[in-house]
Amino acid sequence: MLNFMRLQLKWLFLFAFLLLLLVESSSGLELGVSPPRIVFDLTENAERCAEIKLISSERTLFMVKDYWTNESRISRNISDYSDIGVEFGINAKYLSNVFVESSKNIDICFLAENEGFYQGVLLFEPEGKNLVLGVWVLLEVSREEEKADYSKTLFLISEIALSLALLGLLSYLVIK
Image (cartoon, rainbow, N blue to C red; front, side):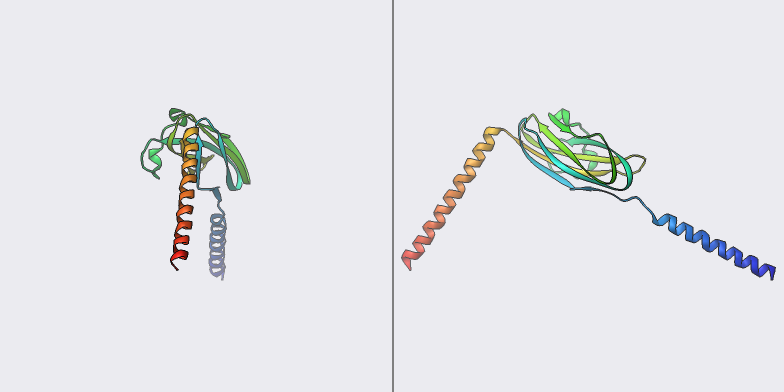
């Protein structure tokens, strides 16, 4: 009878241990960042900002960094992003350390000194964790005069297209 009770006690301890292990392993940290990509159409020396939402299921300190690449093609290989923005004339403004409890919106601003197409990544690294969250950044920087010329060109093209459409409609009505 004593052996039977010991056996039952062993099974009870084993069951309690497995239950504790299961409950302990089911809890986890939930992290997120939104949006996954930001795209800016900038003019030289004009600052633009975006809002990024960080999400954490527990109070977490995020370290924020930005890296850039000079790849001509759009790259999603994080190892291509090793340069700092200053090397490209890009000034990024953001908090380098952000505490998040539940969720928090932060502003990220960019100012580019030179025209061109730039690809970057914002990395959000939670302190003490072996992971990094990222947001892809695309900057299309042009001169102010080029932007005005481009707008005029688009306006003229739309006016010509509208005129041709009206001319086609009138021709159809006359022929009918």
